Image 1 (spheres, rainbow, N blue to C red):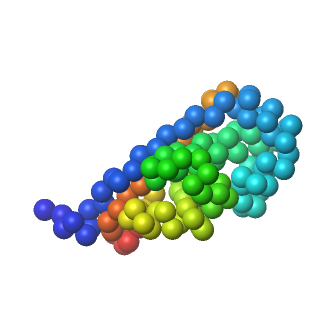
Image 2 (cartoon, one colour):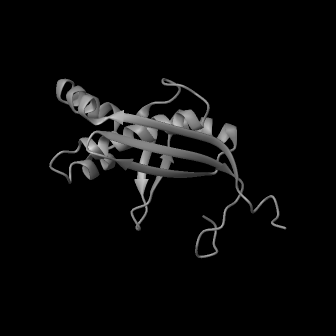
Length: 142
């Protein structure tokens, strides 16, 4: 049997879809939105593509999914306080700041699993909030 302090438990689940065609129009109409929603690192990653909409849309979906996993709605945290980061492998995860971090700590979330996918027209993200220590693939703390 695995001790409770080692086995992670799911304490939140969120998912979100973004219509990329609509998101592209919104970003073109309101360019300042990119600055308000995304950290400099997220913007730089998205701008590596000719059309950053897919990457920005996926990250926007992940931020909304994270809020849902926390059991709160829009406005509970600034979008820039929920940052989608990438591991060396390319796997996405979350770095939380400000009120998002406070909310995560209050609910006991210690780890986040994130997946982002897209087609030409839709971006989707799913976020799991976990509590409890988790072992990484190398056997160390994740």
